[in-house]
Length: 208
Image 1 (cartoon, rainbow, N blue to C red):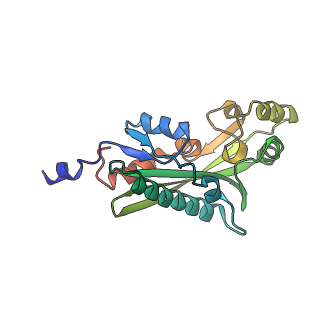
Image 2: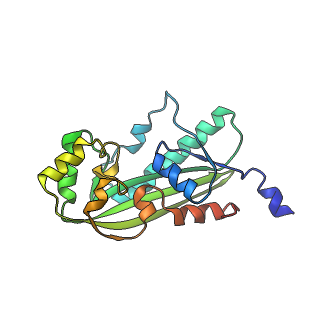
């Protein structure tokens, strides 16, 4: 009986992300969720600003923690019902060089040129808060791209797909045709590692 009572407020979670891919992945594992998005006065992009000398691992953990803190404050202000809050952040790295979201088409083409014919890392951190409980996990995957021609890069950039994507590509888009090998989590590369997400949810008693 105590277990059932502890789960009375675990009917859904808040997803503090605008990513439709993360919503899709939560749907895939049957987790009911509602969006908890930044308000007009919040500078969400500022949370993702790179810091000099920061490693990709340190960057993605810091940004995810900052997003979680901002989302918890947002929920407290909102007067909405209490529920767990989930957020995540993804970055792409070659060595110590972080490839964040491209600033424009030229920047996207530059990033894709760097990825061409090489292996890169995709790091996604996911964090969950509920009451006094907070936890964060990191998923790291490796992806190898085939060598890309200038024409391939131009067509992909012109499609608009790279914009808003770390590393200037989405694994579930046409860029999948360039992927020679993956080591790690496909869902993590998409933006929400489901194994780690399920671990976090189990940690608060979610039936998954």
